[in-house]
Length: 101
Image 1: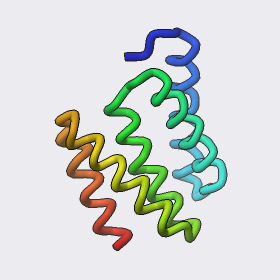
Image 2 (image 1 turned 90 degrees about the vertical axis):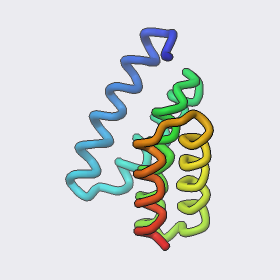
Image 3 (image 1 turned 120 degrees about the horizontal axis):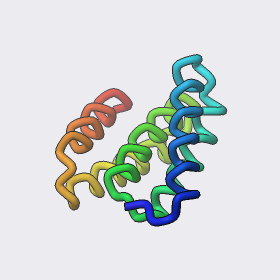
């Protein structure tokens, strides 16, 4: 749960920017927004969003050629989702790992 209203607003805006950048193929902007989102959600201890962001950041990193870091993000997202029972995120993380393998 996000406890500070500034973090909630910040995270929401980052997700909107990231979404638009990713749809337009701007991986640099998407990556920056994902990284900012990750920091905000980690700070807020929102495990489901951290897991989701990790998997999406992992895909962007893979497209940028950072294979080892990409796999680390995807595996961390999968482990976090499994630990907290976020089954939809588990399924997405597994599918994403299959795409980059």
